[in-house]
Structure formats: C-alpha cells, structure tokens
Image (cartoon, rainbow, N blue to C red; front, side, top):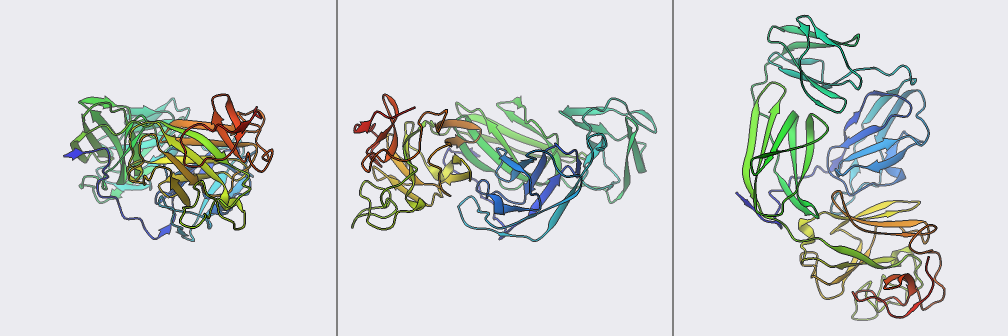
Length: 449
C-alpha cells in the first residue's frame, strides 16, 4: 500500500459529543499529576470553562490532541475530587463540541498514604480465563510474588511493569507487590479475538511522518521501520488513541504489530511511506494592539490584507503573519499549531483559524513557498508578556516573546503609524504594518528590547 505525504487514510468519524474516556490515576498524592484522556481529538485547550470541579489546577497539553496533563498550582485538597467537562471545547476543524454530563472522581491521599501499586490493565478486576499478562503501575516495586513463586516481569516502561500470569492460574490470581496485593478473578469468557485497529491517519511534521491510530482494547505495540524496531515509548500498554512519530527521510517500509493481554495478535502493513514536504516557517509580524479595523477591508479587499476597513476596532483585529520558508504545503495534510501563551492561553490549529489571508493567492491546500499567511488566532493576545510558538507535533518551528525579558518590549504602539511588531535585520521593532508581504518591514522605529 502506498501512502503519500498529502493523504490521510479514511479519517475516523467523530462522535457528536465530547466525553471523558479516562482520568488516571484513581488515587494520587497532593502534588501528583492527573492524566485526562478524552474520547476524541480536540483543538488544543479550551480554557477555564472547559473543566469543572478542580478549582486549583494548571494545565499543560501533551503532544496528543486528546490528552491533557493536569498539575496542581500548589497541592490538591485531600479527599474526593470530581471532574466533569464544561463548555468551550472545539474539534480539530474548529467546530464547537457539546459535552457529556458524566463525572469522574479521584481520591487525594496524604503524601505518606497513596497506594504503592495500581492495576493498569486489564481495566477491571474480572478478567478473561486465558489472560496471559497484567500491567501494573508500581513506581518502586522490588519484590513481586504469587502462589507459584517469584513473578516474571516481561517488560518495563518507567513505573509500569508487564507481569506474566502463570499457566497454572485458574479462577483467581493474586500478586503480592512489596506487601500490597493485586487480585484478579479469571472468570470472564476467554478472549479469542485479535485487537482491532481503527483507520490509520498519516500527517507530516518537521521530523517526519506522524502516524495515528485507535485500538479497541489494551495492547502493547511493536513498530518497525525498514525492519528496524522503533521505540514506541511510554505508556507500556496503549488503549484508545495512539500516535507515533517516524523519522522518515526517504521512502520507507513501516509495519505495526500489536498484541493484547491474552496473546492475540494483529499486524498492519507493511506500508510504503514517502517523505513529506520540508517544513520551515517563521513568525515575521504581529499586531497585538490593533489601531485599525484589520478584520474588515476596503471594498473588493479581503480581511487581514494591507487595506483595513473603517469599522470598530476590537480584539478580532489582532493578527499574526507567518512566512513559508520551506516547500509548498498542503496544510490539510499537516498538523501545525500556533500557540499563544499569555493570561488566557489558546491554541490555533491550521487550517481552522477564525480568519486568514494568503498574501500571494495561496490556499490551505496550497501554501506556496515564500508566501506570507496572515492569521487571526483564537482568543485574544496580550500586548505584553506574550509568547507565540509555532509547532508541528513535538517540533518547535519558531517562537517570539514579548515583554521583559523578551525579544520585544511589547505594550502599546509608539504612534498611530508604527502599529506592528515586526522582525527586521536589526531585530524586532515597531513598524508600519505590511500584512501579506513576506519581505522585512522597512519603515520602522528603533524601539526594541
């Protein structure tokens, strides 16, 4: 099967409502992180209204579009915490999502009291009679024993252990881990079906190909690229949506092998992957404190071009200019994010910005090499203490910081003419706006960091 750099295989249908798939671990210490996994991909973080029930939290997203890592600003309160989804979530195309009303709970223990071992997979205490392995989250486990002697650890990944279940086990299996006991009832019908992989999705980043999939049960994964085994990384067992970045620089053969906890196997591939385009993007200009109506335009013009309109000036007139310094791009086949980090952080996934203007007549499907793209980002940008980051997967393509210390002091423009913060040969300066023109601004004042 041949996959090109601008083709996604059978994208999966998204459910109409957003819900919580898992919230883990179920018990934690007051300073431990919580992993929130949603049942579909979303467009970045939805802001304070998106989560309800955890009043004191800070959020950092993982590189997966449906997983969020929640960390306490200071410490979680002891006892039972309940979390549910609120409003303000968007899918990857920028469409608003409704939220399911289900509530998930975790228990916060005193620092000396959290459980030392947790059963991570299978996800329930009642397991198939032919279960061959279980997976534990046991950060400091040393002594593992069961009724037939010392337990065999088949694999490790950080604090996770894959432990073999002896063939003699029948009906019930008890495992002692440093004095804590994990018990399984091996009474469910045997699992004889191979795991099911959902449609594979292919995107391209600056580092190569990004391959994503869904799987219907806990599995561990082996990936091979040109017959070499690739490190898939933590966690040891995948369930739901998975993603792998492949360092492809030439046409390569890829194969994905998965096995479930009962030993049933499934294989996808080999697939021929052809390298995607070269990514090289730069932030060249931004207007964080607009003085004119950039979101409208003079007659026969386009929003965010060089001819602003005469309407009211609001935060919708803010914009950022990017220049494509690499190959021509089909943005619908890539996942490029522009992250605005300030008091109200927001992530804009391309395509899907609330407003856009291609300076040389390009489009989302054909962003020409050397062309400037002017974007209206989600939310509102701060005029100081702002950082803009452009990412493709885990790769940072470019960034600029306003404020002290920063590449530009930010704040209000020095006069009505020099409204934009632009990259020049002398660094970042206040300049006359030139949205859509990829060349450095020439009419600037010498105000910089």
